[in-house]
Amino acid sequence: MKSRIAILAGLALALTACTTVSVASNPLQARWNGKTAGSFFAAYGPPLSDTAGSGGTTLYKWRGGFARGKSCTVELTVNDAYIITNIRAVADRPDPKGGPSHCEKVLDAAGAAK
Image 1 (spheres, rainbow, N blue to C red):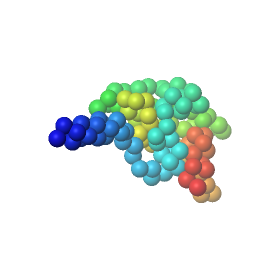
Image 2 (image 1 turned 45 degrees about the vertical axis):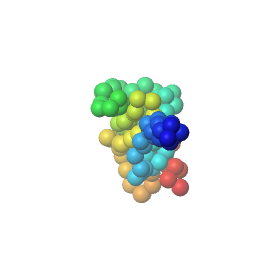
Image 3 (image 1 turned 90 degrees about the vertical axis):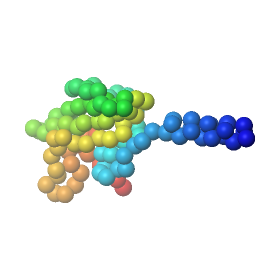
Image 4 (image 1 turned 60 degrees about the horizontal axis):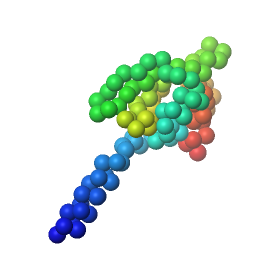
């Protein structure tokens, strides 16, 4: 009986260590969901702002990729372990020829969906 309780307690502890990352529905999510926010900010620069969310999450707003009048603005939802659980483009420019958007190119996500 004690071994069953110990096994159940161990299983419950293991499940609480899991992080929830949303299913990728676009190339930005495919590239960045599950990665550390530190690696994102190290590669592309610091965020413009951050807002505390529920359950220990933080919402970061980032802007960059300035080129020929274009820029990219994204919001990153980061959990308490500093892992990106969601990323969404707030301001982006689609490619008129149907290719990757400006944010997908800037944030190295153009090839992530392949």
